[in-house]
Figure 1: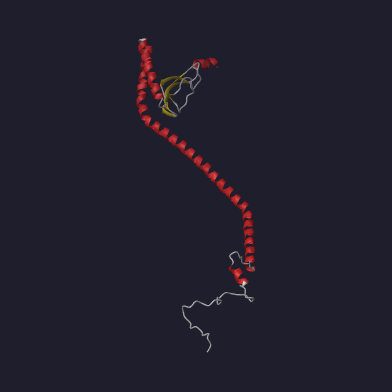
Figure 2: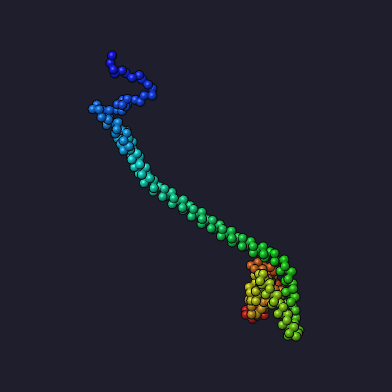
Length: 232
């Protein structure tokens, strides 16, 4: 019998040396292609499909650049038109606001004058009586201090009312105007032409630019008849 007996197989027995499942080349060395694939620095070669895709991407980028260059003038014109429209709207809004401000101020003044009109009409008879008192004091040669006191009161009252827009209507040597005057009499005058105001019977007043009460005046009817005959 042979002394070299085969050992029985055991599941715990280590694998025999030399039976590794490594890829070897034809010459017994490691497979170079597999080693190259397993190397981290190995870079895959570009395929024809990838190169074609890159060319198409570059062409698409060029097309987009060309389109952007072509549409730039159109967009600039569109922006300029929108800017012009906004400027026009701004000017219109400014004009509307200015008109609104003027209208509001005018309505405020009209409301102010309307509120004061009733009060002014009640005070006008007081002014008339003061004027009559001053004329009577001058006609009857009253005490000068008394007359000066009445004039001072009248001027002080007129100064206070003028702050609220009250002013007298000018009548001296004015041409008769039906919008401001009320003729109570006509007299011939050798010095003043026909239609000229000779004297004021009752003073008229304006409330700002509005006639509050017309002035009662005496109007010239022209030269006397005798002078007309002599002139003829």
